[in-house]
Every structure is written in structure tokens, then in C-alpha cells.
Amino acid sequence: MNDDKYIKLQGRVLLSFQIVAQTGLHIGGSDTGIEIGGVDKTIIRDRLTNQPYIPGSSLRGKVRSLLEKYLGLPQNERIGTGMIHTAQSATEYDKSVVAQIFGISGKGDFGGPSRLVVRDMMMSATSVNALKASGRTDLPFSEVKTEVAIDRVTSAASPRQMERIPAGTIFGETDNAVMVYSIYQGNGFGAQRDIDNFSKLILGMQLLEDDYLGGLGSRGSGRVIFKNISLILRNSESYDAQINTQNGMEKQNFENLAVLATALPKIQETLKAQFLNH
Image (spheres, rainbow, N blue to C red):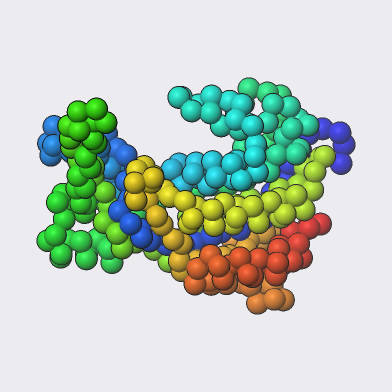
């Protein structure tokens, strides 16, 4: 290969899973609810079905944020009113797991593609039917939680209403890939790096289970768990079919993240066998 820049897709890891809200879940939408329902903070909904969903950007952003904190990375780029970590040079990029997995802005003359795609997660058919049949929701598919702020001087109460998706709601269907993790090889780096970084993606998901998704997390909302996880490998040369591996990992299922984390060393060995020097 000459000195020209190149990058080659070695393969992909497709992760399917469901997310279960353990407590009420609030991922904010527009403020139209103030006009139609008296709700101060509304949730995001699909415009066609009116059903709540988890945006891929919310899930992806939260996992990224937690990994940045876990790794102690500097917050050096402003996005809106917040700050995130990004690599400022090619040297920093080569050392930054977060930059390699999630990508960087196009401001510099270095870097590479994002390795991770995260798709929106709609409510499962089971939860849609259950919430429709219950007749106990305050708004379609949602509850309204009233919170009260107390003035520290006058003790006056200021109530406000927050819309949340009820605890127990399930998002996603089995065998529907939510995360797609790509493994690349190029000049200056090998596929081994992306294989090693895959464990950090799983770590980010574990960090999320101990944290919260969406808003109002410090006040009890947003605890979620991952369940019914499945993993499929695809390589670049036989992309129209699932890989048949010697370890029997054409498709592997995991009840939860703890089981997946235990199997991670074996998974990475399979990734090496399938994608290194392929």
C-alpha cells in the first residue's frame, strides 16, 4: 500500500437489546405541552404515532459523557451551552478512545470516521399495548409527576409538573440492531485498536445502568437497564451473511450486561480471529 491515506472496513458488530425503564423516564421534547396539558416539562414523542421514544442521540451522548468522566478527559470543546471532550491534534486522537469511538468535529485536518452508530428506540409493542389497556396514564403513554420547590427564606411552595414515561416501559424489539460498531484498518493504525476499544463501549453501557438516562436523574428519574442483548458479527467480504465462527458465535444472546461483560474476553478473541489481517 502506498503512502496515500486509506481506510478499510474490516467488519461490524451489531448489538441488539431492549432498554427497560426502572423508574419514570424523562427525555425532554418541545414545550407544546404547556399549552395543551399544563405540563411544564414534556417528553419527546414520535410525531406519527404520538408514542414516546429514546433518541439515538440521547443514548449515544450519555454513554459518551460517562466515558469521558470515567477516563478523566478534558472538556475542551463547546457544544451549545455544554462542553465535551474532543481531540485537538492527531497525537491526541491516537490516544483518545472516546474520539476514536464517537468521532470528532471536522475542524481539524486529522481523525477518522465515527465507529459507533446508535439508532432511535421505539416503545416495544408489548408496552404500547399494556399502557393502552391500563387506562391509568395521565397523558397518552405517560404519567405526570408533580415536584415542589421550596423557597428557603419564605417557605413558599412552587409546584411544577413533569411528564415521564412510566416505570416498567420497554423500548426496542429483539433482533433489531440498535448499536452498530465498525472495525476499521488504515495507514497508521490497525484493526486491533478498534477491537480493544469495543470493551470501552460495553463499559459505557455499564456506567449508564448505574447512572441515569434523560433528565431529572438526581431526583429519581431515568434509571434504566439493558436486557435481551444479542450480538452478531459481520465481515467485509461476506457482508450479506452472518459469520460462522469456530466458537459458535454466529449469533450470541446475553440476558443482561453482566453476562455480556463476563463473556467479553471470548468475544474479543473472536473479533481478533475474524477481523485481524482479514
